[in-house]
Length: 518
Image (tube, rainbow, N blue to C red; front, side, top):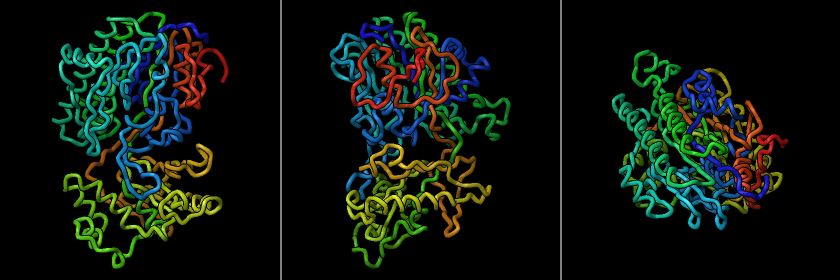
């Protein structure tokens, strides 16, 4: 690649885009636009060391910066140097997008609704954020307000297309509610496509990134209506039987309309953050594991200082499950209950490891001296011995429902990213084996882990593999490329733009896409 201006780059982003479903539906003719692009180019699925949990995937993809640097792994994180939990807004995490490095040049950008990003001041072109994304509305967080660069663009969007179409995912809501959400999602896909086409006709841009988030709520909302689910979807005439596919099809039609407005010599990429798989929450199993097997020691209730607050009283007298049930009933109290159970109900002078509350992926921390406030595990051999014991115990967990191991994958942060214990990331990322039932009991040779079904209990979860497709004059590769490292995408995009790669990016351009080897 030279430093001369390259053909325009078009990146279509699907918040959720299951690579297996896309390939199957494209082959069957349900997604003719994506199918045509695949025939003329190459495709694969994203992976690598960064794909250890769903949160933070977008930050790494669009910045080219590793989790080891930006430190984001969940909306609820452990504040470094404390036992405090804090809510993290991914849009405020320090991970500059790859297009922010175009500032000061002559490339014009068209950035539309990319998840977990905000407009970058000083770039020539149009940027719109949080107009139709769904992030930031769950777990009690407030939705992020839309914004744009230039600021007047947002007013123009509202004048032409009206206000936002807000879609609230009710997951296991009524069939009537699901039908309304289906209609809203289809309408928003169409309006989004019209908006993008309208704005694209006003100028020519060097970088075009256009995101569709509707496939994510569709995948969650209509999962149990699929024919494969064997539930509502078993009715061949059920109106939501193919709802997930139909939302993908609506996006496919809008992609065709968008590409018709763009130069024929454009390099086109379609990528997604992750896929979808059947899986139920494991929200308290990791905490139960640490407590039941003696890694996390409960504080003696009689020795604990008396608190006159409701939480202090509840912590002293009521079981954990009851406290959390009360917390869910009191506005804003749920996070305070979780915080109190971790910080105040633990004897840190005897605790070697603990897990923070999470819905799916488990985040396990060693109580490390010098990193945790009252850490007792010494760095070096003792630290790695504790990790070895935890991993050995995790691998002995059995699901009595089918007699199979309950753990799917254990990722050790020090191995993934090097450099020993990380200052803020969990020491272990634990993926439970996905199964189509809620696990109430898990067995260990020395303990039984039990969890109550949470109020929010979806039957599916993000699959840690996204979709990638590339076609256009720069792409010489053809067919299935297999796994593509998430970290390599941002430097690849800059290479396609003929722009230099900043030192903060640790990935490498995927030269094999362009006919080279890497």
